[in-house]
Every structure is written in structure tokens, then in C-alpha cells.
Length: 183
Image (cartoon, rainbow, N blue to C red):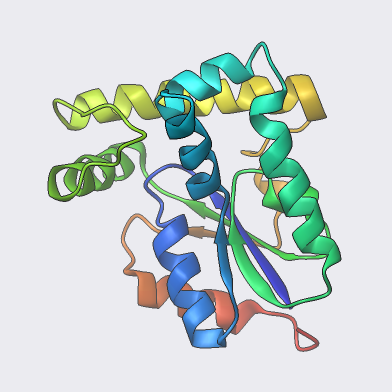
């Protein structure tokens, strides 16, 4: 069983993915963490790496190849990443949605508790919202250019969950309740 989790920034992809993997006793992989590491190794923020990626495909190639290899491993796992559903087509594909303001509030709040070294500091929720919108726009441009796909097209997923009003435990239960019987 492979579960790929995609979604909007601040929707809880990593939190839900980690906790879901624990509950299923399978490994968890985060493409966001992998790309953050790539950015930091180059002395860039994730947004700068994404901007570079609009001109240079190498910024996505490593994460994409890694996901493809994971999908071919035959092992069970949970993965979060914008294009995990695309590179691991035999996964149970979950899209986590969130209201723009709530997503920005979550990201801003998390950044105040523990700053991510791959992100610039946010001055406010509104600042975070603007940065998130720019990041999503960059992702959409890159993925359309390199793969001809739109990760925000909800019709590509087996399950769409709006996490705006839900805790991670509620989202995990919803995912588990919707897994196909053969998973």
C-alpha cells in the first residue's frame, strides 16, 4: 500500500503524512524536506530554488527520480509531495485542501515557533499568504512546463479533504476510512 499526499501549503500534508505512516507502521517520505535540503545545500530559500526551477529542470529532477524509484520499490509507505501522485501512479492519491487564510495562519504560526531554514521569515499572516500564493504559482508553472500537469486539479485524486476545520487525527481517520479494501 502506497499513499501519496498532495495539497496546498498549510493543509497539513507533512503532519498528516507522518502521523498516518506511524499509524500504519510504514515509512514516511517528504519531498518537501528533500527539496528544502537541496535549497539549503545551494544557499537558497525554497522560493529561490523554485524560481530557478522555472528555468532549470534539475531542481525538480532529483526529487522526481527519487519518487519514481520509491514507487517502483514494491514497499508500503506514505509520501507527501506536490507531484507524488504523478510519479507514483499506483498510489492512493490524497489531496489536502485548506482555506488560503487558514493555510497562511498555520504556516505563519509554525514559523514563529520554529523557523524553517529554507524559508524566509514571514512578517505577518498576510505576508505568508502572499508568499504561499507565489510558491503555488511557481509550482504550477514548473509542473505545466515540464510535465503538462496541474497538481491543483482535484479530479486527479482518489480523495480530497478540506482540512480547514479539521485536526490531523480527523483527517487521518477520513483517509483510513476511504482506503480501498485491497490496500
